[in-house]
Amino acid sequence: MYPAKLVKLGVSGAELRTDCPMVIFDAVQVILPLQDGIVATFDSKVITVTEQAAGLRTAFVRFGGLGWAAPAQLEALPRAGNPGT
Image (cartoon, rainbow, N blue to C red; front, side, top):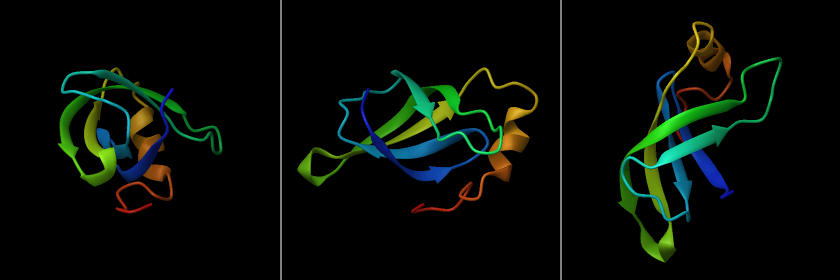
């Protein structure tokens, strides 16, 4: 398991910053802290990866296999759609 900083969160995916060696189309499981019964784990695929200094990477991932309630649950999170949180 590699830690990542959640840069941006949306109903269809997320932007993550990590030192994990990811490539396009890698499968990624995004695990968010469980809050108020909100789904905490999302299966996703890496869409793009941007290399940065010091080995850090920014990856954009798209969530897959979300149930009907998941988008509403994601929108309810306090940091959804807010860059830098």
